[in-house]
Length: 304
Image 1 (tube, rainbow, N blue to C red):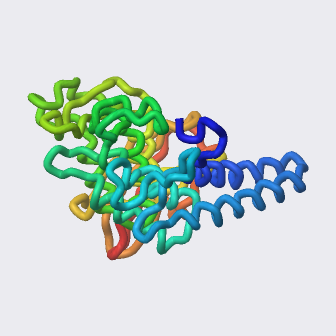
Image 2: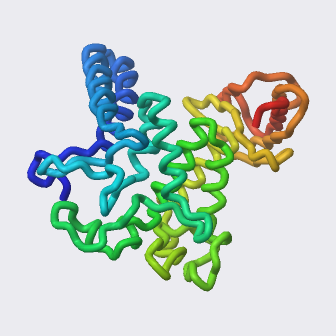
């Protein structure tokens, strides 16, 4: 209900809208709508400046309600820190230094290594707040009310990878795996992701809404694009992995378009790549390939 009377505003959605506008601008240009593209970029810049005004020392605010009250400010009794604007500050291109500080704050204060949970925000609302709406109707630490909402936890991991915090990103991916939880407390299937996990007192680590395909899809994407570094855009495959220090090598069988790729990632003295034993660059046009192919990527010293 934040903003239900038309005066409240969301900092996170401003960041999200900036991302959308910047992605749509090139599409408009391809359609011959240069004026619309310029308008979108101008609006995106305005949203960036507005969201940047909401950086509050070590975090970005989450929103403002209809009365102008800030949500997501340090010291508040509920929702003093929200994960979403910290992650999306990275995705939407906020000031890099501010975004890095905000992400570090989120990682430190929202993760609980003992229960293996990552809160959506902290602390939860102790009682329902009509200005907030249904989120506050859940008990504190359950679902969106300060529990782990797995989408948000996965986005936090992706943001860590994109800012060079690969160890933190990998740790988050590990913590999200059901098999890492105490099964006597988790009480959900150990082989599928749960959409949310409790952080409530004496219910820490209890899974809910299992078989949540959206969470599983995002997890798969972050593993593929951030951890393994496999990104496909317009038929062009780029391979820029961020493997944990403990991994000396890994192998991926990936089927894309009409091609099956056997991809080896190994550590070596210097960086190089081979496509079917022929030297190649890190951008491979899968549209020019058919059948099965082997790709060998050597990660040079000092790289992941």
